[in-house]
Length: 178
Image: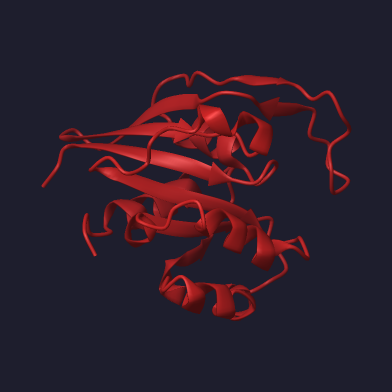
């Protein structure tokens, strides 16, 4: 069993990637947030955006170390996204459950990881008023298209360490190969 992993926090702007890295990291994380040049979408109070990589470290056990890497959600910063196909890499794909575009957003991001879908968990943030069952039903066609089991769709609050730890632990439990 590996003792070192990389966990990529990918997804849309405002889904909670940087916040989740901050919540889970056992050390003060390095982030690349800068003030936004345009008003945040979706009526948010978001004032910063990630332009490079966020980086932290999580040690779920004394023997296991996980590098936490948050990637930019904006297409214009896609060049900063690391290679996810390396062994030991897990992907937490963060999507917003409060957006009418949740399904198309999920499909758009799943297309970026065709060979890594067996090492990916879809994390739905901002889903306070929706059950995980209703979210899974809303994503059913996309999940079927990409052969992602519905059990890999989990809700989490990026601000809550225990919530992020739960989805990160689920990702670590995924097999290396399909």
